Image: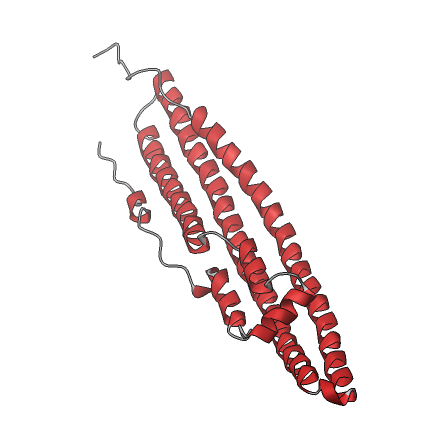
Length: 244
């Protein structure tokens, strides 16, 4: 009796594709960085308002190779598809064998192979969960970076206005009223910068909660997969037919 596989699991063992640009959060931040002029006055305003460079501080939140992380999500999905195809092949062979083989040994074999197929289905489900949550985290990191980037761009605008106002106040200090207007406008923009930074960190924190929830699901799925591999049904030895 011949057994023909109905699917080819190894077709899913392909290298992951390069992820879309949306999985590179640093790019979103760099786009915002282009709006922040590195002039002396701007740096002075940012240091006065926040005590640090907001761009450098924000990049710390997004350190890491997120493109590789996104690729890992695709790999989990491919492994899930492999398990699904293995399950299909085992089930198909089991049904074919059951049509022509009867007896206690046949019944035991049927149960054994069905158990293997079921375990493969379980593994597929957990691997699909990993893929989904990896995608959630990758997209969440990008969304957080994009949100933070928009606030950083606004911070750059306010810093530029404040820098111009402060410089003008210095140059027109001899008039008295010129200095008051210039420094007053700069002070207003500094307050705005502080508020914008608060909104930027709030946006990052919002997505951090989503990422932490996904990370907890990943940990659970990983533990389940490890357990299923540990007690994966294996035969005690080769089948020994007493008649042969």
